[in-house]
Amino acid sequence: MNELNNTATSLGTYNNIPTSLTSNTSVVNIIEGLTLTKDADKKNWGSGELTYTIKLDNQTDTTYVSPVVTDIIDNGLVKFVPGSVMINDVAATEDEYSYNEGSHTLTINLKDIGANSTTTLTFRVEKNS
Image 1 (cartoon, rainbow, N blue to C red):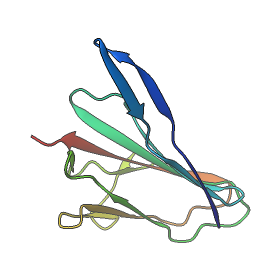
Image 2: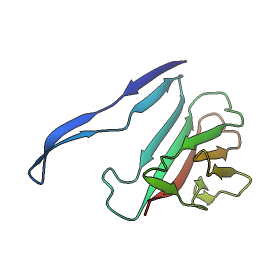
Image 3: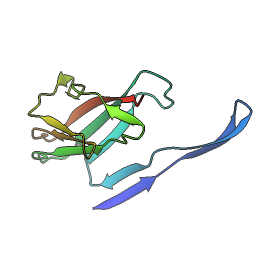
């Protein structure tokens, strides 16, 4: 499997201070028709909760069987909001996901994703106090 990594940068002035910003790295696995993407609902976050959306898109003619999605959450900055996991806009059950406090790893067990279909996951984090 080939992997394409890409990052964007921006240089400017913010509040009279020279400011440099670097985006997250967008990682694309090059498999014709099978993609995994992750986005946040805010590009600049001041307060409140942040919602991440993960999409597993299967635009192939083959079922993607029993996928497991894992996400390591940077607990230095944020903490996972328990009970916030949704699968296709339906609250996930404890059988469908787990969060390991020690490793800061969210694991989501999905049902098969049929040909030409998409599964969407969301979860929330909040800033550490």
